[in-house]
Image (tube, rainbow, N blue to C red; front, side):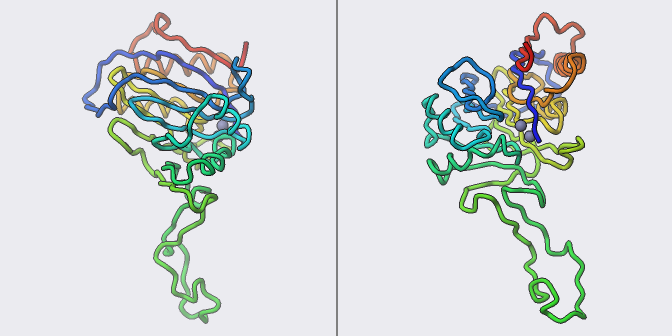
Length: 280
Ligand SMILES: [Zn+2]
Ligand SMILES: [Zn+2]
């Protein structure tokens, strides 16, 4: 179950009062985000559907972030936007929910060897996982046929993935995968998605951090907090915030809390522009 409250919180500008961190930077700040999958938008050539995908072009990289909810709709939207999926630096799959990953089969049909980053999601992981065989209790008094692997298990049990031949690298903890490009890994504590790991994309540019999120199941405030540890100046925050059923005052509080945390100011209204897209 995923619900989207998609925001474009443009220019969540913060003062550059860094607190000791000396982050690496990606090459430049020029770029654009092309939304490839959404239930909003003016472009009549784009098919609307629940889910999210965006081509993030920033710092000289072309990053596909999530792949939408339906393979054929995703393929049609990619075509409508004239995006070449052969020309990607890598793909980020934020989490395992189908409205973010179901278009991957189209990506692989076009570009089967593309590098894919996905969350290490434990035993629930459709992107594959592994677990030490020491996790289960052994009983040497049993005959071999009553024991796993005849009593001689491999040290590590490898669990399957939905796309066996895909070039997937699992991300367990927050990792800088290229200079200035970090995948923030956080786990949801919310009932319904508890223990779900989600990746967010943080690109550190000379103008500040470009932060792209999928569903924000771990909480957008926690994601922003983790991003601010890389660079407290957040230049752009885009994606799904999972606030579609939240009341207005809760949303306003979240925006203000994040802004104040980053800007350390009491009167953010002069700078903050947040465009809410799930209500008129
Ligand atoms: Zn989700
Ligand atoms: Zn979602």
